[in-house]
Amino acid sequence: MAGDGHAVLPPAVKALAEADFSAVAGSFTQAGFTVAQPADGILTLRRPGELRPAVLVSVGVHGDETGPIELTAYLLDALAREPQALAVDLMVCVGNIGAIRAGKRFIDADLNRMFRVERGSLAGTAEAARADEMIAATVAFFAHAGPQRWHLDLHTAIRPSVYPTFAIVPDLIEAGAKRELVSWLGEADIGAIIMNPESVGTYSYYSAEHHGAAGTTVELGRIGTLGQNDLSQFDAASRALDRLLRGGPAPASPELPHVYKVARNIIKLSDAFTMAFGKDTQNFTALKRGDEIARDGDTVYTVQHDEELVVFPNPDVRVGLRAGLMITRAE
Image (cartoon, rainbow, N blue to C red; front, side):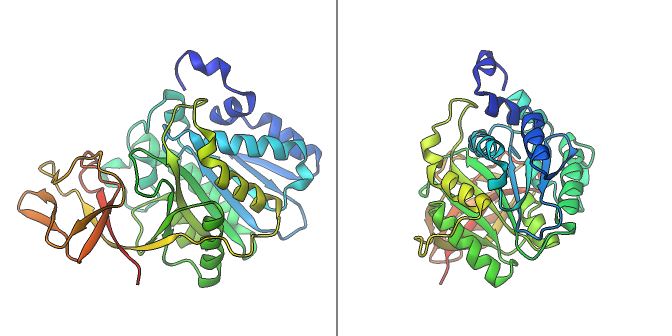
């Protein structure tokens, strides 16, 4: 958010990027909602005495992924102008506020690896403290929620992708809720989903595992500068999210995403780690059986299936974290 462009941001976008919910909160308070701001950058809106679907929308978990901030800012601003149209209990979370303000991905470490008990050497980071605030607010939000629980963690991808939009969906989500989520992802024009069997400390997996939410990390397109994003790439997702928040009928038969499953996580074990391809490699690039993926000292990672696709290749992560995700097409 640094730079001369800061002052010319549309007011709704500027407010959300600065974690300023004052205008929105005032509108919903006047409309009779129970409004709370349990921590900086977190807003909850509830209808007292009603059991409604509970929807958590998080943006800015990576501070340089600004498109979802703009998308959500416009939807929230529109709802604030007609608050009675909000048909769900809503929590909006602006994740890494410090990184957004600095125009960086993170301050000390990746916030989307902090939603776990064991943080090791990262326990003292700014992101660990922020994750604790987000966890506390999430616990409070879902504590009295009914069975319909959603968590849409909205991101944009750093690198090109065979599928411009895709999502990571925890395997452990209850079957009925998972079907609804996958249908919503299809409505949002998400091209592929990866069914994930285990947590690597992400916010959406935490909500699914600990709060029974239909949680997903959604990659909505390419990364861009705040106020200069090509919002047309988010049109379908924006319409789908607006429909969900307003309680409109779901489309009868959206085109469903292609489904993949995790073959394994490639974990960086030491500073000797190198990948057999550049970190600018497209997400969903296909590799064949026996192809080398990475080396880490005496450890050599190779493709074990006839075909595996690589997602999120990044040899520059900290030791102990995932440097790449290998997936296969679901049967």
